[in-house]
Image (tube, rainbow, N blue to C red):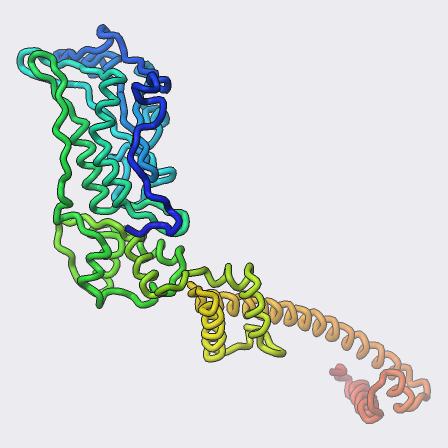
Length: 422
């Protein structure tokens, strides 16, 4: 189990208010009257085969994080489509074998219908005392569940383990009742089922296939590990084993179910980091005094990251990592963070170049228009032939004398030959 360091051991227990010594003050069971619960297998219309009370459910809730167990029921008069919103948590059957959504409460819906040849279909609803007795019976399995479920990261996010899934199977079996011919209520004998071989921990899979492990996991961020574990192909195995075997062109035999994808990656990183704490590089560099100081000290003189080549970027990363090691930390996602910063700065330089090019183009167009206007004015003055020398006109237009002289010659030649002036 990959547990958060500060997580306290959880003990399976029945919540206060759901015990006889509390007077069942938190329990408000409201089963339907018998006349609303029936089954007519000969009814032509499907909606008339079962009475409206046949959709009534009692449930057992389990907090997989803290071990609390409690019970209750739903309003049998409410639409069946609203069942999920009337439960304190999600039924196990609606969850996959991966993450358990916060706050980690799962519900086991209790069956009420029994059938035998003599009595036909009959419904058996349970009293608060019977539900309490049932809750007591499943406490060992609940304890096994909370002890074995994976707890990932500083928040202790829950993820199914192979043993936890097996413990829940024991809970399901323990809550499946039978009724004797005399009407006596019977529950299965609680037992602890060994984890079957077809349920495989991803950590165990990696241990026997070390060549498939990616060393980059050792410095990956939480988000990168989560994204790596979240592999969902259209067919075949998903998660970490599926991704690895596809990349290595290997095939996993059918019939296995894998558990603890994220937990295995986090455990690999923890082992790679040793006694140092994995810490997000961006967070450390931007929000901690040590990180900001290290950044300022390492900032390239007279340059930005945009001007830093790969070799110097690697040297920067090595320096940051060494500084973090002195703090008892390992920076995750450091290389990607520095490359992302450099890419952002280079993108800013690209945008600057675009703006400068646009400005130059505007200036060049303006200069072109001004030059054309100037040329028209010079041509006009030269056409006057008012006795001013080329030097005088050249000084007005800030051009060399020879340039104006050539201009006058072209203008005069054009008049003589009748050809237009260029």
